[in-house]
Image (tube, rainbow, N blue to C red; front, side):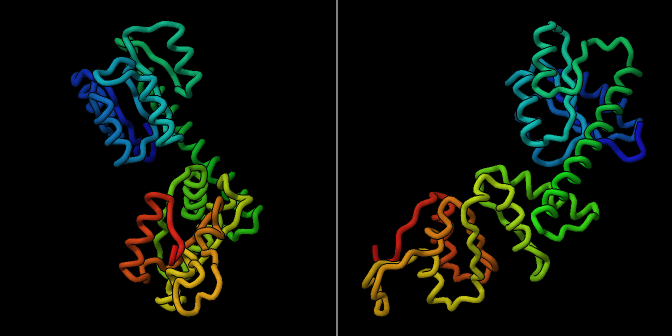
Length: 272
């Protein structure tokens, strides 16, 4: 069906349907994963990236349209084909409006047509991904970032910008000098906080006894040299992005305090 293997997720509460598609698509060189419920499908989506998902409209713990929303949120480039034996025009229209690639009725009268539909959906998924990666790479370059045009760099830009639209804490891993700070800046300029401060602190460069004061700030009289109150970097980054570089070199006790801040989004100045 394609030069490169297509990853296909089959979601149907009838195991016979899942097994049918597994045999059919495996012979065509596809990598096929099956699920008979929403919970199984969500686990599959966490473990692999799919170009195509065939989703039954009626499932024991959800419906196909709800699962369509989950798939598009978790893997936007995955093309979803809704399949059902209970077809209505209203449901078909709603599925297409929600981003389904196509809507097919069971039983399938023409298996060759279904094979061709999966192939077309996979091609559309690949084109969409390449287009997104190139657009996001161009955006990064327009902001002054030196982003290469290799597939790996386009993929990095794509991932950074998808993460940037989410209100979450992000861990960036890599050897020294590989561009973790650049990646953090790329995420910031694409985020909803792009107009707010970007504050960077190198945890390895600060003396251990100063890191806590730099992060949390302190009240007047909190320690010997605290002659006036001072805001910390957490407050300086309020509403924006705080990038903690080389956080693994931070004292373990302070890492535990910082974990509490990340989880609760609350902290106190030293001495308060």
